[in-house]
Length: 105
Image (tube, rainbow, N blue to C red; front, side):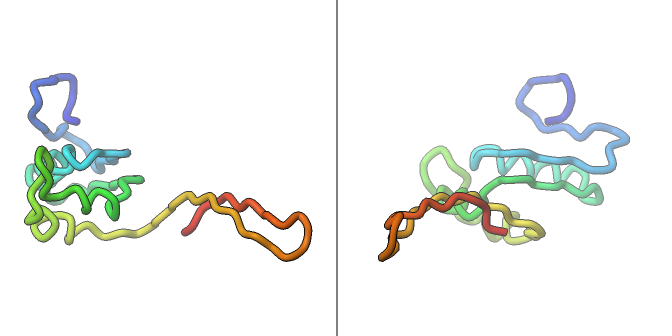
């Protein structure tokens, strides 16, 4: 995030109208918060972060503290949620086992 410099600091890019963050880990969420604090009027789209899973890691060693949920994640507005699933269902008639695969919206 933030150009060609790789010194670990998040820096906004001048002239950017929108940021898109794709597949960030729980350790990278504070970087997204830092970007938001640096440019609060520029929208940041968080795509496929699985925040329901990442919230469970908060407070563990080497992860952001649980207060991060109240400070930043509670202000993230989910607009579109896509989650893939696979499961099997048994039936009393042949083929007796039906495999399902797809997405939940």
